[in-house]
Amino acid sequence: MAVRATAATRKLLEHTGARVPIIKGPMYPGSNPELVAAVSEAGGFGVVQPISLTKLYGHDFREGLRLIKRLTSRPFGVNFTIVPNKKYMRQMEEWMDVSIDEGVKFFLTSLGKPDAIVKRAEGHGIKVYHDVHTPEVARKACDAGVSGLNCLNDAMGGQTGNRSAERFAQELSTGGFADVPLVCAGGVGDAAGLRRALDAGYAGAQLGTRFIATHECHVTAAYKQAIVTAKADDIVWTNKLAGTNSSVIRTPQVEAGGLNVHPLVAFLLRNSFTKTLTRTLMLTRALDVYKKAAFDPDCEIWQAGRGVEHIAAIESCADVIAEFEQVQVACSE
Image (tube, rainbow, N blue to C red; front, side, top):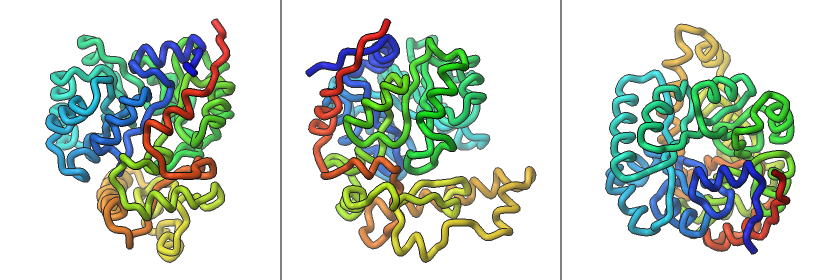
């Protein structure tokens, strides 16, 4: 049964080219071409995380995009993280050039200011959505000209937000964002979760954890089964991985390592002179841990969000999207 969309959802579907208002988040791990393509092919919208595609899954970036295009004729997007690192920014510019060459029409930006990317994208007919975690950041992103907002909440996996999806939607509903599609990023694991997000005023939802527990995602069977087995109360926050709160499944390995950084590290993360370098070093180490967790069943440092509560089985992306497609969205002009 096809989704009947609100004006906001119709705009999201127009921007992405999807049939169902479900976005596969740009995960690390979880950006292998087979997964991205399977989500888009099923009617959702897959988004590539370039570092995950290249460093974790070993693809040349251009060839990785071309593989996705061979697996599906449907559109997909690319994520660009804006960080104050010259070497990375040069690499990001190269990836952006390749994305434009390969016909990508949707960019999801994270961190930083998206102004320059929006200007460049406009010249190529590319829509830009930006990750936001507060109304203040949302306003700056809209002022930069983004087409939509990916609203990070405190139920998401990995690098998490700081407020509930309901609170964030309410704040944005009174903040002058009525014309901008809002995507609920975090906590949606089934059709009922999407229904709640739509009722709260979101145009659609971004999912990460749900798509890790699919046949097409290239991670260990142990990781997938841990998601199916876990409940919401099994999800904890730790800042010991990347220096900011990360949402992971509580395991003996997580508990043994503790959830909070040493007081000295906490000081370095607060200090204006040392916080950027400290976070960069911690994030680099965290990426190595996440890579190991993707392929080594003995490494139980598994990122996941509280949507695990509603994930009952490892399924195909087609079956996952089919469930969400049953949601009927009341029309409201």
